[in-house]
Length: 195
View 1: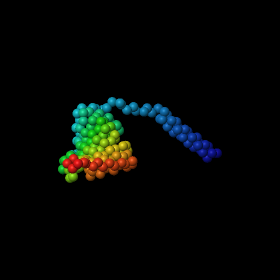
View 2: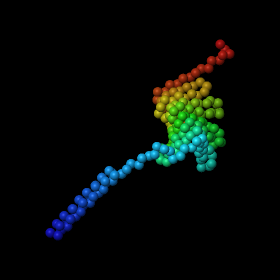
View 3: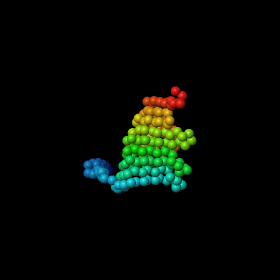
View 4: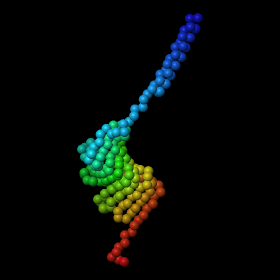
């Protein structure tokens, strides 16, 4: 009789514990308020000039523009009319990019350039400048890699044009690969001295 009563009490205590646990979880789910993100930035900087350095104190890149809005959450910073300049180890200009707007994520590992993006890669060896036009460009790994999944046009001056959808590029070494629907145009330059 004693063991039967003990088993009944343990059963009721277990059932009450389970019901208490379920009711606490339901109460917590129904009464938690979702924190609203402020539509306003934490601060606004007029005439910004951001410079990023490596561990040896050498300039990696610089971003300039008229206005930056910084949010204190995963939205990071929004840059108006940014002009991005990447540097070589010798502190020479390697490549530049500009757009209408850019987003820098919270830990600065990704820069998303949007609307009217123009990337210019300068090649001092053979004097061929490469110009890339697109509507969106993701700059990864402090500028080591650029990607997108939209239409992109690449022109290597003076006479080669490639266009397609999707980009996988490494501006430091001047390698840009289009991923699908690729079309290439080669423009011959007419010598006007020999008609």
